[in-house]
Image 1 (spheres, rainbow, N blue to C red):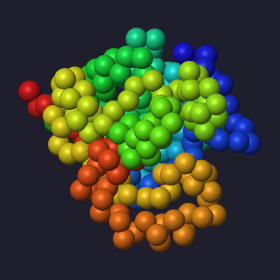
Image 2 (image 1 turned 45 degrees about the vertical axis):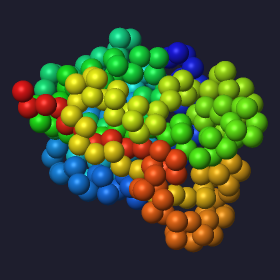
Image 3 (image 1 turned 60 degrees about the vertical axis):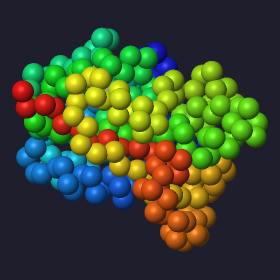
Length: 247
């Protein structure tokens, strides 16, 4: 698995996993949870380009962790404080030393997501919060494609999702209730599940057409509320804000 992610994080002219930085929902969550000087752990930080530099600009004591040496080398060149996740999913960080944690678009990649959650819980101070994000496997685009074609699209990478899904990096799949159940089963108090607004950008083919994004945003805006009303159907991505119990 680790060998796969060395290739996954290599720079190329095509699709790379560090695209899509700072969605409005992410910015709102960061504004709520993060304050300058806080120690933040980023489980599955990748190459640091998606969130790491942003955290330095926020004056956050950022600690990034990943399994890919390629990704970590890139992150270190950006001046980020990073280290490798151990084979068992644990982190080289003191117990109860982190003020906050983030784990964005990672759990769906893991053979044993419970191990990652245990490591994050161990690192957080009692009462500290964490935020997770995962793709919504019950999103309407997934349902329609499966209904019409019988093909289950794992959605991990445009390079693999349809061409060779058996190689796709997404191996775990969540909807709102499944995400909540998993987090609670691993010792977290779930404070809130947050959805993304409905958007036409999530449709097949359209999500690659950056030139069309302004038009798609305009057409989607009147229906944005659908994501909050029916997140299990209309929201492409799910966020969970959780807390480590104080006792």
